[in-house]
Length: 258
Length: 311
Image (tube, rainbow over all chains, first blue to last red; front, side, top):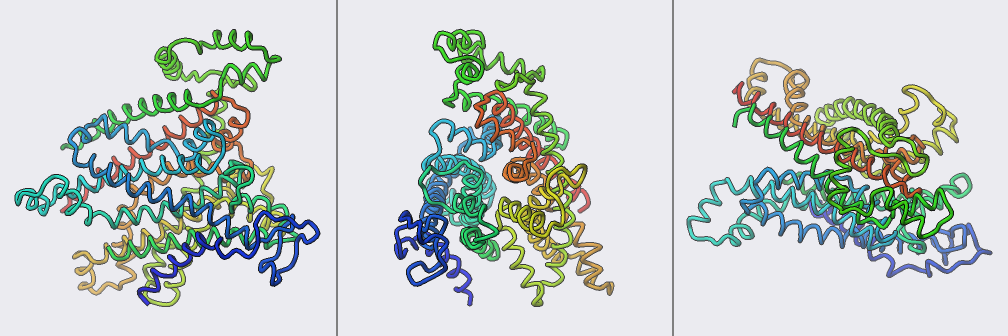
């Protein structure tokens, strides 16, 4: 039962990310004659307004959305932790000027970063990845830095230093295991937020590119057919909801054990 | 560190941070490929390179970046953010009106969040051991996972269009902002409800509660009278930070409900390549976030000293 609480969210995320491998049809293949088809053996969830396989599109959309989230999340975790640990230890970082700088860069909302980066490079998957990563990594650095500073004052660090541990040993062997839990907790919450942001931005028109399949743009296409084909709206939202829920449940598990 | 010194340092930090925000915003905007002179020229005249150069000269875009920045900063201190490239209106007025809309949504959402979280948090704690509590706990995790933009669209599609319960356009007063605020508040209610119930649990472990139990008071009375106020105080700083985040978060909802708030302005000015307006809106949002963050820091500190003083 205890393992189940971990396994279910991980399974949902893995399925949505790797599901495209078992997609029954080509997500781009149009078949206008066969539009709005009901679910059948060939098209398990029916077809959309261009006769494309809805299930395949959902699974490929998951590859794109979760690909960005997982890649961005890993970059944020690794780089954010390294930089944050280093800053938490460095004396220069304690200064008022530095903490103000960190406050300033984290104060600019993710939407603003996205708009600026879309302005520079146009809308595409890399732009979305960079914008989300940049805005998140700064918040991650801030979190790691604060956590590290709190841990540095504790007695076990003094003990480690006095028994001859090097600076990097104190940081990675002694402090990191103590702060990793809140970090991963923050990361899971951020991943849930990233999924929603990606979908929201592409829903209001800041898409990932013209022919990229993703849940947000499927949603905005499906919205006009709400009255006649409600499934085209509800299926993408179901996938977004399930993935976000999975990350939030993981976060809840991490929080509960503290 | 004395409280006075702390306050002084925080206020100093506030100004330093605000200054840095302006510098970063300026640099980011200069990195953007939108050429203000060209955007303006394309709108007003038939395009001609020498003309663009002339306008560039006129707008002062040929001067060194530092001079441009200081000049712009000086104007900013006089609340002069320039004029919109689209209709020559004063940008400060445009952003001011937009900010008012956003502030109304966020304020209403904050009230909804505070009331909702209080009720949900207390219920979550009181019912934590039975089936109702477990279901409620799951529902509140699920509520965080529903994107606000989906809530907003289904609100329009279902409540307004299909059931015809309330109209979402042309309302005045409170009703104008209520749908948007409601959609914005749902995830906050769920998030803070969970946080509050955890905080109540913590407060219930304290010695004072044991003493209250010894006096023979009922658990429910102790929760409402003793644990709840303490728990509320402990989540106030995070709540303040959330208010700042809401300012940016309302962008999506504003776009869906077509309320001309800050987020709506950003997307609108982006499509029009209206540089001064983009600039001013981003700056305003960042300012709001910084101020709320620092307020959260100060409140946390004040609450800590109060707690320490009592002990």
